[in-house]
Length: 108
Image (tube, rainbow, N blue to C red; front, top):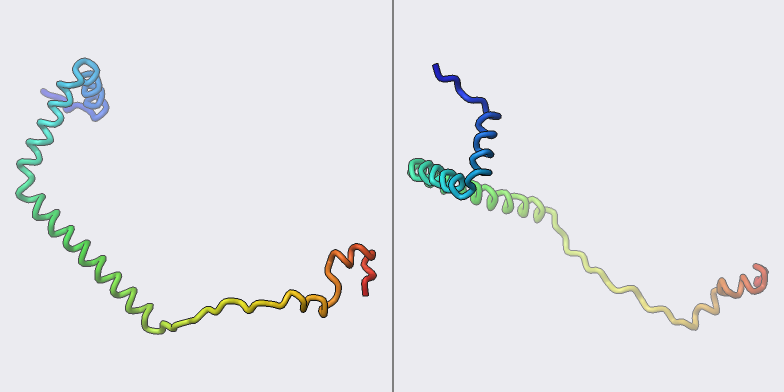
């Protein structure tokens, strides 16, 4: 009776094989992957293409949907630059902070 190996035993065997013969292990892995890809390709490639088309179409629809919802109540706002102030106008407002400190706070 053959006892199925546990995943830990399989992983240990793969690591042991890799440590003994790295290129042979890589070759066996790539060969197995190529065999699997050649048998799964007739089903996987059309499925992946349909899935990609669905994802791209859904993304395009979602972006248009969000844009349309944002544009429903959109307004145009003009931001103007702040006005310039005459530097000589500061004298009419009172003493500056340095003048207040120089007179001990009794500049008024």
